[in-house]
Length: 81
Image (cartoon, rainbow, N blue to C red; front, top):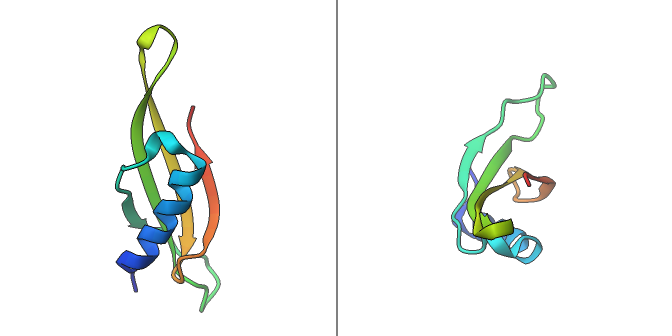
């Protein structure tokens, strides 16, 4: 099973609201390795990449990783800075 386009768009809207500098970046969706428990819901990692400007106009890459389950529920958000 995979995430639907509507679920990906919903997750993306949440990420864009929390991290405006990645707005417009389309996520790379990868399935996450399953837990060892049987019947555990499948998880997906969505990776958003963009570049922001730092001191002196220098470009700083920004990566936002989202872990979501197969229903599209966001379980965890992490970012680089």
